[in-house]
View (cartoon, rainbow, N blue to C red):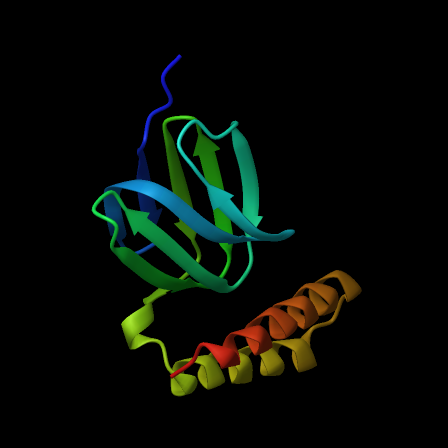
Length: 135
């Protein structure tokens, strides 16, 4: 069996399809840590935490995006990442991140149940890890 050297990658937000391209590798911020998707990957579905998605195109160039949650559906022939929200890496900066942290902090203060508080606290922690990539 010959292994393919590329697979179809799609990045979708509720507003639009941001990317549909052939990739040789995609690194995603999965809920359990960074995950590298390669051609012929085992079928997997995972939740996505806030972080950077790096897509290595078949021409060797990298495309980067900052995602804020969602999930990825991975098959041997492709990967679809359905993100709650996406910012192209070139447009991601401290102001964008600070606004998200502020919104999440307000929501955490207003949260009534423990499950929501726990989820928002984890989201806040995940967001704080993005300050090192904010320009």
